[in-house]
Image (cartoon, rainbow, N blue to C red; front, side, top):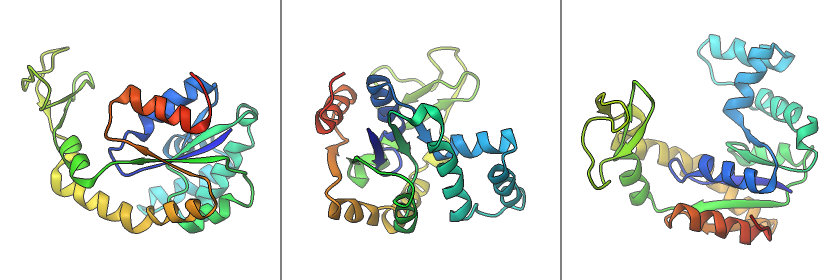
Length: 209
């Protein structure tokens, strides 16, 4: 089963994609991961991407598309995969249609105000990587694992989160209509509990854990 995960920053796409991959025994294809892998392995497209990144430029669509195409052609994608972070725009989706058949598109639907509260309340330990949230009962400004201070990342500040959501709605949200018109879109309430979200996704896919 070939699946795309859509949803705004903080919706939990990465976490849920990993859970569904484990349940269905298929790989999670994250654009960031395969970009780094292609550059590390020195593939032709990886070298092109590195050139843009080293120059401080965005990697153009055609290079990203070629890297995704290379990755989907690998043996471990033979029984399906989850695309997380691609496509981001309708032109990317149209390009994807030329070399892949998508069976389902999962949209994690979470209101902007919920996402702002979720992300702006997140705190991270720079020493051990532990993540906590100010809404947790018993929360303190010290890491419960190693005792070091918990800090707010710049990406998690409320104004930054709002900017990221604005970009998402402008660029990526049109994909929802694109896949809805194809009859592939399955909308999931991303504000419920984590296990409930996983169950809802599996049910929407007609799969069992």
